[in-house]
Image (tube, rainbow, N blue to C red; front, side):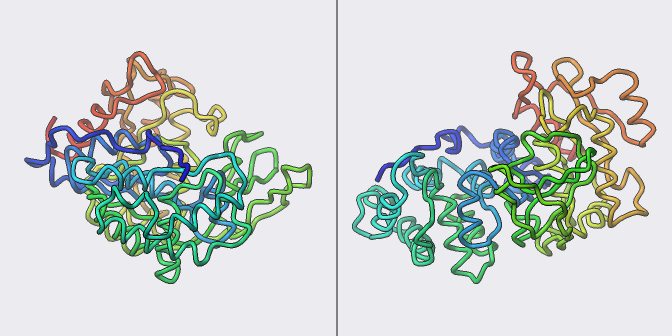
Length: 406
């Protein structure tokens, strides 16, 4: 079968793991989404087996959109990506990792690709010969659940095989993501915990300062005006707008509850991090569910925000202090009584190499101090690429804040 190898998703061959000493038991927790934390996740997996990653499931673009239209399900692409980032490539057979990360081609006739997918579900297909039988059996089982429910109009172009396996598990377990995530975490020898913040099938929307409304996370890449209010909604993205039809005038907001399993992990965290990533669609979106602010405020541990270095199209001029204020406002939606230090202690920056929206001048420091937030300055951004954080440096700094030393 023709597949596109997603080499960036496959973890590199494992070097000597540093799973020893106090680092190995540290429990940093991340409210994150997208791929910005992928390399740092890999660095953490070499140091601790207990990092926790709470991910958004609101993506509405690319191959995720086809799955969501077919099954009205949460997006699973970020979950698949983080499972792969934390996988132990030294213990998992390479054919299994390659299969889980592979994509179908972008070109070709959708009907022919659906037929190829059906053939892939058969035990006689050549792809299974190189894979140990326990992996092959589990993968075929979950692919089979997807294939039996695959609509005749499903567009498989660029579909991730890992996403299809997770979708099959979701359907097998009566629309519950927890069992398939647990199974594939075990099969991929994941060093850490990956969970959705909520399991409901919702979409991200934003009311902008010009009065317009944007529905669908995929539209956040080119916002025509700054965000005035972020919300979750059951409304489907209005794809007709792409053909010149009017954009939706309103979207009914909803506030799903933080998953009980995710809340339990917040209660056990040694550090809570709001990390790099698209500010609204990857970071702030994760803080919208009811119960997030309450869970964070009640956990006595360091809380750290790592703003993006380089360009983030979503920010539209919002500086570091403005981002910290937006984090605090969102968290206080269900913990209005919380003191700043219960929600956010530090903003972690690199003043030497970082390039932050609005800069890091005295005014930014004064605004952060007025919020009650301290600045922690560390060398973490690569000098040659101001938009890229050094994953090893970030991992080491966060574990240091956890109390594990350098």
